[in-house]
Amino acid sequence: MAEPPAPPAFPGLSPDERRLVEALRARDEDAFMELIDRYQASLVRVAMMYVGSHAVAEDVVAETWLGVLRGIDGFQGRSSLRTWIYRILTNTAKTRAQRERRSISFASLGDGDDGPAVDPDRFLPPGDPAAGAWASPPRGWDGLPEATLLSAETRSVIDAAIEQLPPTQREVIRLRDVEGFSSAEVRALLALSETNQRVLLHRARSKVRAALERYLSEDTA
Image 1 (cartoon, rainbow, N blue to C red):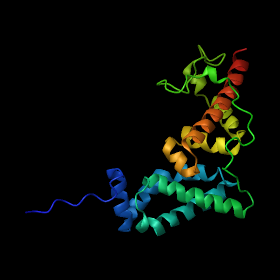
Image 2 (spheres, rainbow, N blue to C red; image 1 turned 120 degrees about the horizontal axis):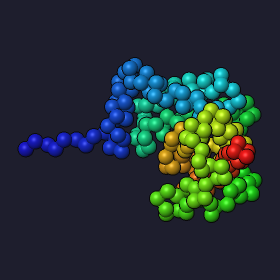
Image 3 (tube, rainbow, N blue to C red; image 1 turned 60 degrees about the vertical axis):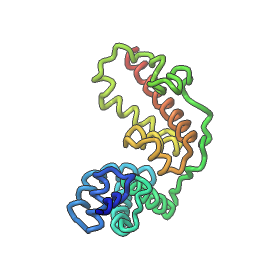
Image 4 (cartoon, rainbow, N blue to C red; image 1 turned 180 degrees about the vertical axis):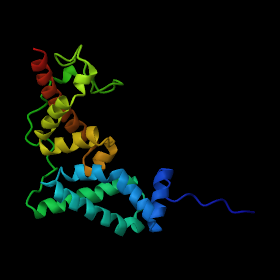
């Protein structure tokens, strides 16, 4: 009787990630370049959350890629390949920031924050399929063309509002809403509980929405 086929390696990974892991372990240069093409720009943006210049962020990313090559044989697939790569990045960036005396603590939930900048009642409640969206939109929002909401100027208002957030809120909203990470990935990268991640994201989004509301109200006055 023929033996049953062996279970696939890394059953928790997608077929695409299993392919990449196997290729990287075989020292396939094309697979490595594929990863660089896929993640380089985003890795630099995330590194910039920790260090003070684009040049240093690029150095951090270069160290990250070296870490990937050195560590791939020991990768056990407990997280996705992407999360593993970004965890190497964040650890490398934090170490670099400490060396430059720019370390940021992520242990504080509130960061000295005094609560949401927008009344929580203006958002749809948890459990609603659209939870977190506006129940009562910002003044000046209705009737604006989509081009206005997506304009470079509007985006600059959003970016400026994010930059003014306390450090941990800024991390969470950038990873979730700019880089497109899932809640589970953000919790793994920043060592946050599910509740902490949710509260930080809500506070960050409420402040960004408040800034956008002020901008739209001024623009339509």
